[in-house]
Image (cartoon, rainbow, N blue to C red; front, side, top):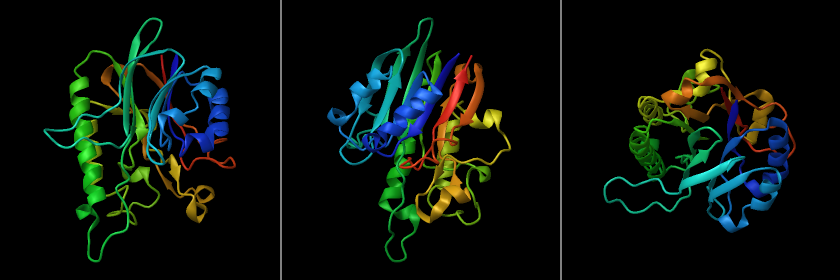
Length: 272
């Protein structure tokens, strides 16, 4: 059995003690990390190696940043999400992909940190017309195009990340209140559905089709004790991977309720 996790740590160096504690307790074999908020040279490679994990990183100072941790060898690393046509290169560290060489098989894994897309709007400006939201939708277009290409490979694939979208009503605390807001705007929800329509599965929903559950709670407003949150962290599976899925969970207990915790909690799958 193999356990794979995705976790937005919201600054890996600020959250390193909590991350190491969770790794020791949860014991995932492969981990997708997001929002590292550090350059690669500031990443805690040695501490994670001492904990039993190899690491590959796409870092950025202060913002963004993604990584893949693995107890096994990491190969064929891709650190750039391809652009569409002749667009300028995107310098934001939001995507990393690799092949994990297991003893008897190989997995393709990607860690994804989608743009939030929100921010202060100008007078009479609509969210869908803002530059940050347009960038978010373009990111999803690029992601969809790239995943469509690699899904042609006959292999188990896992795409873990903070997608910054609650897809369905069950994925957000108050669908009516958030109807045209960031995280739940119809255009970003449709973008996520288009990605799923490539033939990917939302691992958590395969096992929990009717359960309202969240993976993120804002620090502001005492949201976690009130369970005022959203499910915006996912592990998406190729058909080959979903056929082997035996468990999918959100690991908030003992993680999000700790002192100096991330505002997200890990999401996990087990493959048999």
